[in-house]
Length: 355
Image (cartoon, rainbow, N blue to C red; front, side, top):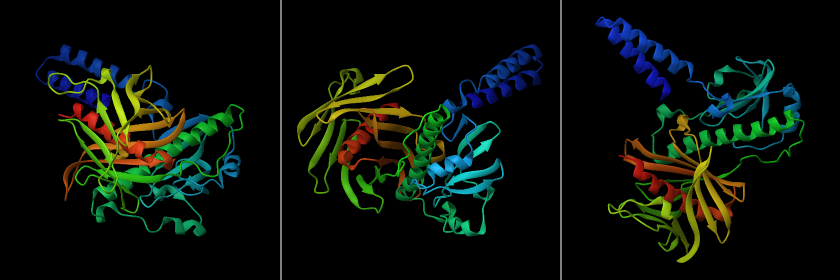
């Protein structure tokens, strides 16, 4: 957005100069320079979902010795080279959609990065098998199911980068983080608004979800149509718009289960659910633009990550038209209905922002 504003400012300056308004054009050009100069304000790691940098002299080989047996959504890591970096790189992937996460040396830093240009990976002949069977999006029917799986791998890659970076930063600070056997390996579910079913990776109906903004409805049912959970706003204004400050009630099996409220802090915002099963937070994080999912939330219970929600409120499919297409990466199946209830509630509530 900042880049777009800068480009429009430059165009305005050139238009002013073209009609002889050179002083005004010069002032506007100066403004454009200031916009572009400040475009990268802030720390790099805070701005990027797809690439993180850790200043450390830890050798790539030492990291690989610790990560080599760790299972991830992109498989276990292996060693190759990359045209853009020095020496060996640790490679996770590629996925069926060419997703890779690589850890490479760049002078005094380690670079943890998501890539899909697999031709830049220099590999040995015995690793060539990893680069077969890719799905070509241009030759695949773009359905909500296929798109959700594509987006799910992008979201899983983003989370993998985040958690690898956290471990490497702890090592760089002299710590000894626990290296799990499985990192970010999750169950996958998706739901699209044209069909209303919450489905697993194989396309099986797991739950039914129903939603609307006017009147407000956010309900989760089993496959027999029996309600399992719902979220109900406590107050509306005269136009039927939900009043967030009044909070929300979550019911489970027809009984009050917890209270949902909106929270905003200095660098975090989202929803808090105070429930019989503990305190859950759904914290928003930046849009994953490579997957066109813009309503993303980390679901945590007492600070422990339980799921990731990714939402696309308005995607156009050839056979379906425009529809909402959402996905959930579940790390703990005990709370699956709760994740579904939070997903359908959040995405329904967010319709207030769509025109």
